[in-house]
Length: 146
Image 1: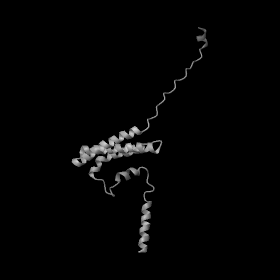
Image 2: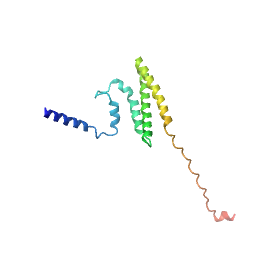
Image 3: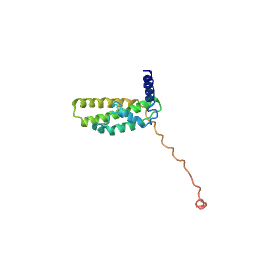
Image 4: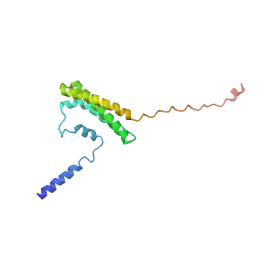
């Protein structure tokens, strides 16, 4: 029994160490696979591939100068992804319950996007470049004589 406990503990510790060397790009795959318990992608998943990829790209590119700004920027991207997936469901689902849910998701996420965008700081105003200093070229001796 004690040997079994030691082996189980060793396996558990080994499993805890798995994934510690994941690359940043693997996070999108982890998020996409969340809740699938290792299941392979079904035929319906292909309909969402483009919207999921776009959301992950936009989330990775979303940044901010503070944790608050970064959080809001990333959540806007995440909500846009939810709206895009709701659009897929609205266009392709035949289930009235799914259609109601997708419309509700689209409506609430769109409203939350607007709320978060209102919170974001205004982008810095670009200052126009300074006018170049006037330059004069020395007059040629002939031009000065005339």
